[in-house]
Amino acid sequence: MRPLMPRCWRLARGSRTVTERAVGEDPVKILAISAGLGTPSATRMLVDKLAAAVRGQLPAVAAAQPVEIVEVREIATDLLSAQLGHLMPAGLRQLQQRIHRADALIAVAPVHNGQPAALFSLLFEVLDEATLRDKPVLLGATGGTARHSLVIDRAMLPMLHYLHALVAPISIFAATDDWAGDSLDRRAQQAAASLLRLVPGTITTARGSASPPPQEPRVTEGNDFESMLRRVAQGRRAAGG
Image (cartoon, rainbow, N blue to C red; front, side, top):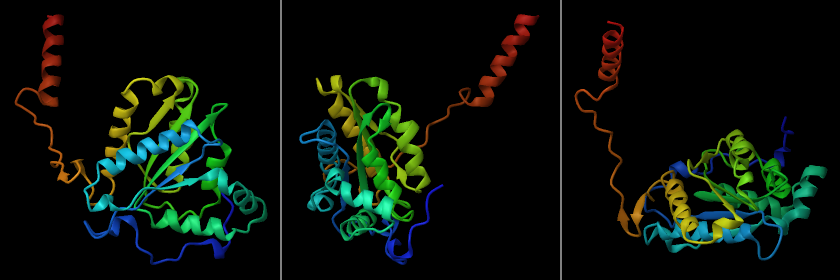
């Protein structure tokens, strides 16, 4: 059970949510969180790749503001103070406000012993529950082998769902072998597109060009579900006869 955060930590009510952002009103604010423990790190490399993919798919006006990147390891002491002392340092309080005001979030963590890095989990444990409500979030993780690829679904996704975030349907895991070739670039583009579909006014196929609205699948006569069931039943009767 999550501990109740002190009132002084709570976000101001009445602030605008991402769903209230007017189309084309302001540059899109994208905040990227890297929980890598070293410099450089594969986690930061994946964050940079996803940030570039997201900006590359934004319209020119919306992409005017660069993606802001936060290194969680730089606020590790503040996170421990907030967890152990129940007092949120000023720097962590400011980060909470920046996350709340962002139009979308990119969050990437390294995987250690089958779990996302403790710093990554600790950040979301100390945030006020309202911080990520209705916030589009793109999840990513890095690890040595593909054995860790289920960490996103098993550990990271439930935590973000608890916080009522709008998690992009396509996440991305990068193992060591994935950095060879261009498959990771293609996956990053797909993940970025899935994130932007959740941000009002940013659905694009290329910078400056709007993507066509999704079309309902066409159902032709004889190809609908009821027709298929009838054909199955007829086949069984024929076989039995």
